[in-house]
Image 1 (spheres, rainbow, N blue to C red):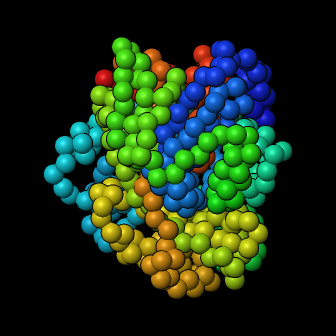
Image 2: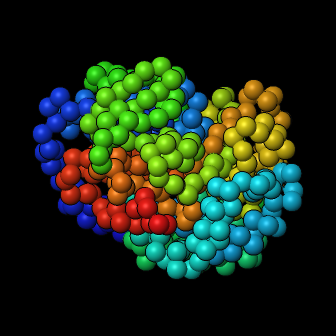
Length: 436
């Protein structure tokens, strides 16, 4: 069925010639997968592209994530029951969810919008657009494979459950996935274990999302950066934006601590820092950072065939690049200035042990633990599009834990918006100013 959906999108995606872009400059702020993907498509459509990053393009969430390219993730972060679950989980130092209590106006405003968005209506409205952008992104990544390798495998994703409650939930999830045209199967324990003959699994069963793929994020990012440099895109490090110059309804210059950039078009794709950067343009964006952690075994003594989500543990496991396994998770709503909480990492490894009892993974040294901040919108959908105040600004952020999964698709949509050509999908659900 997923092939039918892909065929449908391949008919919609037509190569259009962009507006006249001779000597036209676009400045992209943010060097994660969203910014770099946007650069990839804009350069190919004729723009003179500069990407500026406040750091060195090497330390963002695009590197440390689980590497999923997952149409299966059609349930938004803001969904029914998430608030109640969150309150139960946040009191344990090793739980996968935590909100740091603090007096912060932006957090309070975001929280109220999030609570209102955590509804059945939002769940229903988000499923199709999340599916569509994920399928678009998957299709684009598979095209990228013709240009460079990033250990991409389209073999599926397991969602393993242990409790009767989640077994019931899995039945409904499979039904919904099939309604959306996604190739999905509910597995018994014996069927699950047969897919992983190298290790014992503690679980009642699993969902197998055959529609999903995975890749090695580090390899993807390094390959994409090399490709952009080769094609003439300027990638400038240590350029933190401090302001913008405006003229009428246009932003004419990006100002950083080091220099000024005259520009015709601007893309803000600054991930977890997007609220502050967007605010410099006079626009309020409901977005907060959510910290996640991961540990990667470089030469793993253990083996799994499939990436997996451990439902009760809220942990992701991914085999990567032949000899690696990555374990990741948590959603920690906290200040970006707070030091990492290593008990969260213990919680991840303990959850792995509960599902894979043969995995004895010692707590790594702190320097071996990756952590980063995901940009969380107030309803679980990304922000992709123009704003009313500035006619040459496009914002692309708020992807939460789906940044890499939706990266290539978002970059293509950004390019289509800037080039004023028909979009590959309906972007109305991603409107930047949907909260007013």
